[in-house]
Image (cartoon, rainbow, N blue to C red; front, side, top):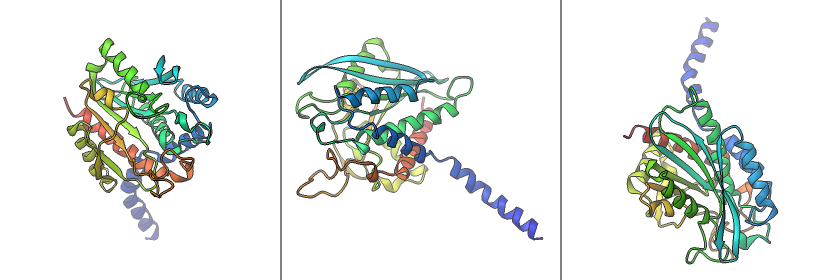
Length: 303
């Protein structure tokens, strides 16, 4: 009788165990972020930037990887940059782009700024997303739209966010894809930024495409994560802007409220030496990963 009860108890647990296994692995995403951040500062022209490129190249070496190298005309002169695009082909005609930036802030190059949340967390997030996509490929293809993971360079300003001293990589890539016809194939551009914060509170970006922002909110509700989304709203300048400006449906998924705001740090830990690994969590990356996977699922249901 006791043996029968034990078997029944085990069977009753199977659905919950299966559900738990369906969660995105924020633990592995955190591990990627930790290893990436351990490189140190990754500002353009610095030694850490080349190491960051090598790390991305090594992690994505078995995928259909494009290295989009270019020279940006910046306020400090010509700067070599490199975007990375990992392509996971699908059976439907169209592309879903998940993007992040990976470099750190050039003006903060002398304070040891490692950007654990700002660049590091979402780089880890998308590297683990690559693992997820690989497991869903059958016969070398996803059962839906193609998904491209894009690691953008040059998001940070060299001097100031005034004018066009920022988003160098995304502006270059949007122009390149407009010229070769890729933009017309993009069904949705989902930008991830600063999403490892332990106190996760993702704002609704009012510049983003409304229906796509709503779809991400729907994905948050379906996955049980709605409490982490859209309590606040505001306009955020970011790497989605060049795509929005060219008519691509785009959304900025961002938690810009990061750390306590004080007189000494009015923007919290953002762009300070306090942006370190102890401020981010695997739990937050699990939440965002779950929502991204569900967003892909919802987008695949659209024509």
